[in-house]
Amino acid sequence: MATLLKLLPLIVIAFFIWRAMTAKSRTTASLMRNSKPLNDWQILEAVRIFADRLGVPGFQVRILDMEQVNGVALPGGEIFISRGLYEKFLGNEVSRDEIAAVIAHEIGHVALGHHKRRIWAWRKETAAIVLLGVLLSRIIFSWIGLLALLGLNIYRNQMTQRDEFEADAFSVQLMMRSDLNLKAVSSLLSKLENWVGGSVDRSNPISWLISHPPLPERIERAKEVIAAGIPQSDFPKNEHA
Image (cartoon, rainbow, N blue to C red; front, side, top):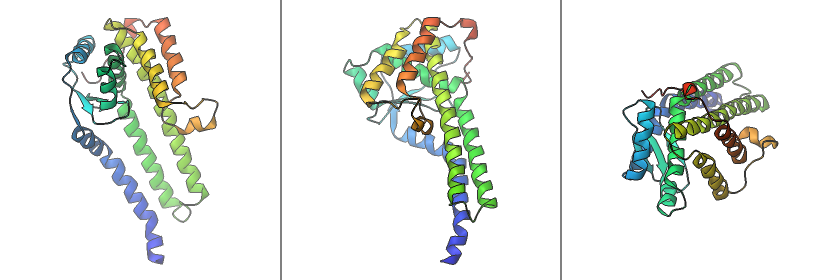
């Protein structure tokens, strides 16, 4: 038993290293395994327009077998919309342009390099955990170790929240350049707020512990970007090119 307790910090460190090294491949395999190609010409036409505006060959869009309304992107440019979101489109609860706004948001994560930034942050977090494990192996599970892990979690979540605002703004820009309904960005977020229920207020300390910004704040910021308009010269290039 005593030997196991001595080895426990090393086991934890090895686990975090393994997760950091395999995160990308495990996520990609899971998403591809649980999805199928989208074959809806209305949505694919909007995606084709996006690709033309960005000057890239195209984007692969797949339906992810997930009931929750959601969108996901991989660093290579593969876009996933959840089955729950697509079913709302088929049921006329969501418009074509609102679906396009979700896809534009996910393209934004790719174009702005958010995945690379998150992977780098995850690696730094892993390195910090390893360092803690080496230097503080006897107290890694004490309050000092827990506070350190909490700080890393807050750092990661604040970065993710910033990424969401940037992807929303990118979505507005791409919708504008594609001659699609800009207000679909904010209207989809408003519908999402109704579907998921109450949102965490920014003044609430718990907001620092969540990975996505409160939806009301995302809606207001999207409306501000829509109202202001974005010069086309400021439109970022897509890393997928």
